[in-house]
Image (tube, rainbow, N blue to C red; front, side):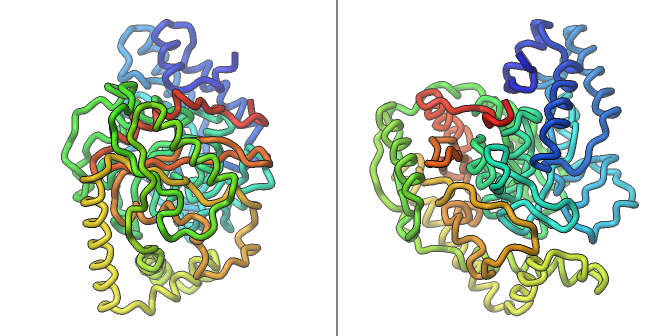
Length: 466
């Protein structure tokens, strides 16, 4: 048994029984990282001496019977958009000066340290998280451990690829238009975008109130355990929700009998869903019905909000790009410059109209969830496609989210959504089902995902890595 293959909950149980130590576990994770980093390029920074020191401290606490939390000593990685004290946060960009003080932990990182988890590395991201693949001009191309010719998606592609390869059971990513869910779907993992504000964030993303933080894990239970840690409050985030003392593992196995679930295979506007995706997600809907839920095929009844997403996103890109010096702009990903050029042309009146349309969508979904407890859709409309370097993409800027139409609506509405593995395409690549809940219904989303996981178990680690 390789400790790198164990889930966080399994590691916690073994630590408690003194059947395994945090140091042994971290060494196993380092071994997996050494084997797989040259193949998938999921990490951009590590400091092993510091991580080993933290693991030894966790081991001593378990030996003394005084762990800081059930996850004390469990290895975790952090996406390189999230501040981590003492380590550079380069955001996948050559424009960031690494020679500056790195004095702050982001809220979720502070809570992770307080709970004793062992942070062992920073994971790759496209520059400033601006796209749904993970490639940049600083660290190159990140690849999918299920097939290294394919992308793991993005922008949390490094986190998803690491978890899928067994390089730590946990990671924290960010999701502004699907950036936790897309790579989790492409790599066969579990990814949760919590309700906006449930996981405090600081500094606020340049992309504003569409950007969430959430867990990448191999199991639903692990995500629930990590939510218990990272959902704790932090005064630096003025948008964060009030403290909720709930334990997300309580009631996780209560099932879904009697729940009202809307199954929407196209959201009413998606024209191209890969047939393997469509078949696998329909099977998930059937499984949920077999588990006792009342499943009805129905669309939520809104038009494609792609224009709202893109224009709000490109305003954020313009804010980033226009604050750079000319020398920095020359170093930036061409995609950032292209997005910024569009964003700079959006008027204040147009922004106000976009904000109004976004609010109307949010109200529509609040009302929809008066009729249905959950909404089920595909995770991504296609399986993972070919990985490319930043300069190799030829997708028109107007089509940069066409292949992930199920993700971005629920960033606009800020409601919780997760993706669960649900099968494989003809090439053996993972496919995924999305479960969307009402605002603040994070525990309900996790409970439904756990029910699906229990009835339709998935392979935790990519076969090439295990």
